[in-house]
Amino acid sequence: MRVALFVSLAVAAASPALATDRTGYQAIAAGDYQKAEETLVQERRIFPRRPELMINLATVYARTGRTSEAANLYRAALQADAVDMAMPDGMVTSSHDVAQRGLNRLGTTTLAVR
View 1 (cartoon, rainbow, N blue to C red):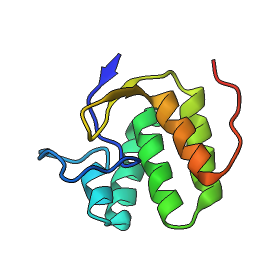
View 2 (cartoon, helix red, strand yellow):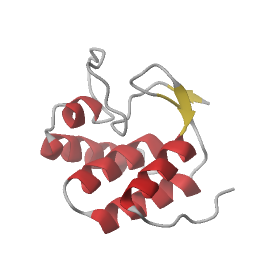
View 3 (tube, rainbow, N blue to C red):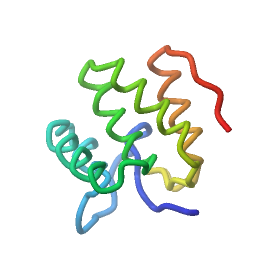
View 4 (cartoon, one colour):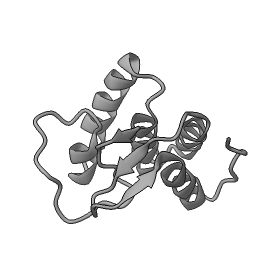
């Protein structure tokens, strides 16, 4: 399954205009972590297993000093089915790769993935 979204782990210069920012990308890129968190928590109530939401919320947590919470979400994304994610630079990568990079940046160890 290909999912078109933009994650904040590799924030590029400018993001494309999106009618609604359901992944929190624009708020994260703008440094508005409170708005990003509110958006992501609300979206996760509807779609709790979407790895792109887990990864972006983990990014917010990491950037706001909540390392343990971030690590837990990155691990949850690794346990979810992998989806292709469009990155800000136009590349497409697996949600598992993005989550693993997030864990590596936190300096935590990974769980085995399927």
